[in-house]
Length: 181
Picture 1: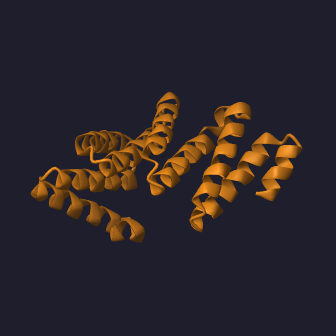
Picture 2: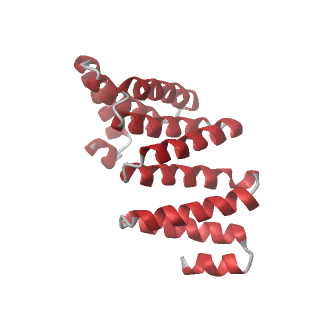
Picture 3: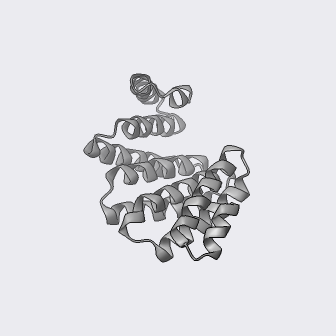
């Protein structure tokens, strides 16, 4: 964070944003969630004010990480705002993978809020976009989320089939974190 502050004082806004993102990730990794949010918000502010089309991927990551940390803190309204902003930016830039990622993340939040039908709708949209982009990890995530939503609305047989499909995909991708989920 100190390095980011030095760049900020020097008026090197994009370098400051880069270092604030690094600090946010470190804070997030040790579950210092409020600090992570602070760093990500600073980074996003500088990216929005001083960045151009070359910083879109950094902005998308900042929105995703802000949403994730807000979700961890059960600040669901904030998380949905960040994921919605991410989705909008991804749509504007034509990034199908980021759109799928934002929709899957939003599906998780809607599930936590008990809105399982909206969760399922988001997961289905995410799958379509991920398939169009041939993004295998995002396809598998959307299938997992669809299974979760279907389970919660009482469609256990469909949920099991989706879970098995997602697990097979995660296994083929050797993504142990997602396999465990």
